[in-house]
Amino acid sequence: MSWIIASSTTVARFRYHLETQILEIEFKSGTVYRYFDVPSIVYKNFVNQVDSGGSAGQYFNAHIRGCFRYARV
Figure 1 (cartoon, rainbow, N blue to C red):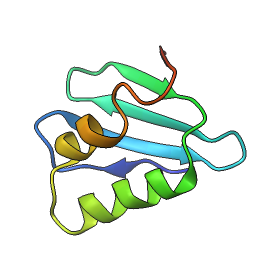
Figure 2 (cartoon, rainbow, N blue to C red):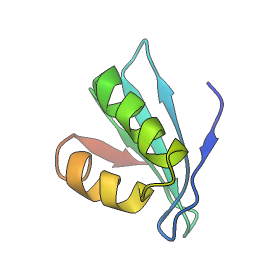
Figure 3 (cartoon, rainbow, N blue to C red):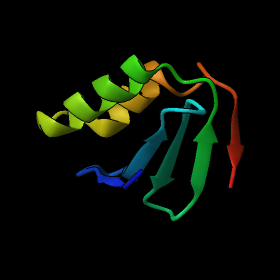
Figure 4 (cartoon, rainbow, N blue to C red):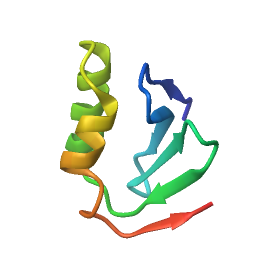
């Protein structure tokens, strides 16, 4: 799966693995995190937020951060 670039002060890019439901997010700091058991609709809405010029950081804080298990890569 290819990376999606985010125009954000927090999120640099992200990608999603449908088979494993893992969302990988690389932050502007260069740190990458994997979020586990993320439903595809959460990923699709994340893409829509970014594509429509919305804030990737706001979407992350509202719908991903604190909602899923994660690990630093």
